[in-house]
Image (tube, rainbow, N blue to C red):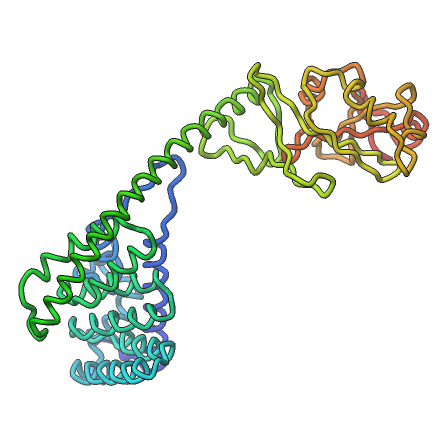
Length: 415
């Protein structure tokens, strides 16, 4: 069966798609985040290369699907590669032309233009491995001048996949690892690549080859020191994480024992999913962040927001011990004179307290007693602590009677 023809527009679109997918693929490998509950794996060049080999751009064995046919993407790649309209020699000449154009821009310090030219050369996808290695290595050099260090590392890795003896790519990648503070990765990279540069390289004069090997050994010395610093920082970070995890587990245990509900939901069983930011209170009324505190005796101390629906006002209370009665917590605040008349409108003998419930209905509140302890109030059925901040509404008796409709069990619907 004849291979399908590919038009110039289709070729360009497919080449762009492949380049974009490769960029995305490499970026994902380079910045792959730690899997939840799984320790972060150290950089491993061999493993990275194996993953790169899984991309269609590097596959040597294109396995067919269950139906015996290759995917549409692979078929299009094959069609483009074997299109009778352009020979491999033509493609190589085209790639050479883009390389030469990029070199001219590079010499004129027009690095972005150079990158575009080298990228166009890569998109040709000729079979000359040395040429492909040079295109990627040169694009890495241009990105180096623009400060795109991760892009440099990506292109150098690919260049060395095409040609492990490309000394410029090897050295440049090692330099970027060191500059980014990745000492261990730099050492691994150098140890992996040095054997390929152990003897003179065809097409490279001895002085250049020896200079590259010397550079790598010098970088290796710096990288080893960086690696020691990196390992020291990792030990310190590990110790800090251990302490933080212990603190998290103590809070998780306290919340779980009290059967407290939070919005956003807090995880009580997986320490790595427990997020402090969900407890950090950030409001204009307070200059610094506030958060619930667990004391040495195992008691919680809460920030509490008082709301006065009738007047649209609020008060922020801090360090409210959970075993304190609500009336003792709010008494001082209500009796303190305030410009809007809080001390006039809300007398301890004439106030009622409510919490808003999380129910699928109109706004529903539950009345709590001033004699209740903070701990029991926060355990109210259907009540959730939002972003680490308990909220208690304060009504005077007359306003509560006017604005609330009794439902049952001390629950009211806000009119």
